[in-house]
Length: 428
Image (cartoon, rainbow, N blue to C red; front, side, top):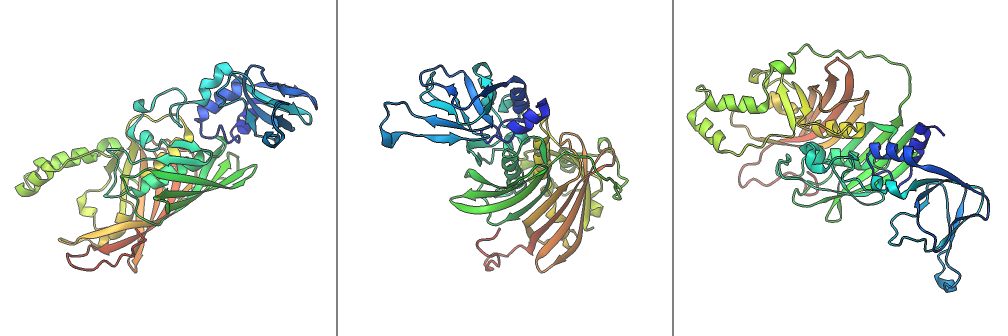
């Protein structure tokens, strides 16, 4: 097997899938190959544990020591992708492992054991404190195979509840950590069910719907207090060559270097004498926390009534060089200001509204770097029945269409005091 084949195999071992892709590639370089004949001892009771063994081909039987009582004998068979020699509290084997058939194993020697315990799911070397806020937001705690825990960090956008983009990004991160690192997400479809509580952790349960040679499919449920608040289905594909064309053309807009970011716009408004002093004083007193996404708008406020919006964005800070992380970051960012575009034609002085995401779909066309500038082109072709529909396209600076998106959101006038809510209780 060549290095890529070894990496692909290791990426399908459940124990290893929550590791950074860089760790898996380093493990692929470090593993040894050992072969055994039927009846041969792979490990003997009392022998030193010399590393992590992963079954590549064949079967092995685990048998208890001879002095173990019959009803307590844990005899069972190990198959492809199964492992032993990891997580034991003893320096010696407690059982016998015997080859049932011709057996081939990958062995990761003990001196490389640190590769199995990185401090973050995205990087094998650095600590989470050195990463951007976005990478910390998308860091999940693996609880067991296919179950992860995420949090809403201080400083993360919340909008009084868990931000929809956070649910999308964290759920995609959980799904990505159960797929081999040679497969990348190419589409996802999400549904928001219940508003998330920003003060509680979120449990992400991944269901392995399919694992094929070229494609893999995952369903993720996000839960709080035992209730499913959000679901996501994602499809992953191994890279391959094929037909290519691009009919979409990136709009002719100013480059990001010529535009102001949100902080600069806010600073100008605070000092602009054309704004009432009361407004400027009130805005200055409000606590301003920069978003983990830097945004630069291509149009001025005069265009705010159009059912469209163009802006450049990128992640603040440097991200780890994991392609899955970058796709999770743009998925997170894709929900910022997205559904609100469907309200633009209806804005008027004194009108208060609210919007809540109902569902969200993304198609990833090409590789993406989330810490480089991307142009987000948003249009709202329709609003009806209390729902606004928006479409989006993301281009890199070379004009390549890297993503296409759609979303439907609940859009309503904000209720006045004393007015009964029309929002169904279980919905956002």
